[in-house]
Image 1 (cartoon, rainbow, N blue to C red):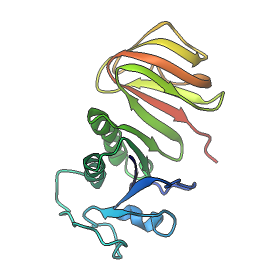
Image 2 (tube, one colour):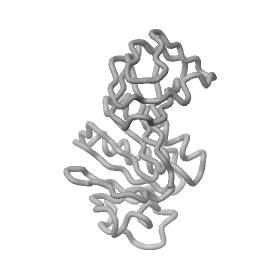
Image 3 (tube, one colour):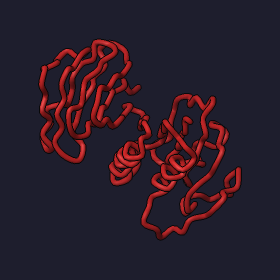
Image 4 (cartoon, rainbow, N blue to C red):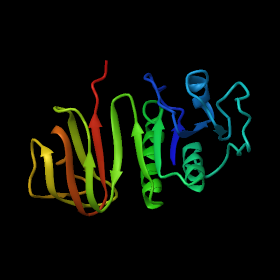
Length: 202
């Protein structure tokens, strides 16, 4: 099942394809998503919303809690059986929330769910062990960054710079700004890798 989670960061400017997806709107995201995106469920503490959302939330969470609304929505999507999660509104706004949103990718990955943050400037995914394949237009700037520790990549294909054996040290910027030849792939031997496909920002 494909799930879309709308977050209260920078409003998404493009179209969002909700066909066949279950859409969860987190709290203040309702202010930019209402009337633009079909919403199946509103979720959160609604501490940043001035109007009652439609549809009415099943539960209103306390404002003082350990989880962000994005984490609650991710756990909700996982409980519904999501196999894929797309996050919109994950970038912009507060940097601490953006960094927290990157950790939602890890939360989803740990549950066996493919997930992607779609911001105004990039598409961001998190990969674990195994062969990874991506599609994008030729010439896109792609960055590969270790997440949570060192990472080891082999068998890189479809990149301008494609070493046979790439060690990404946590704390190093070595994987930033590669160029995709179009579709690209690689094998993660160990660790976790953030894949950032940069978009042109108008």
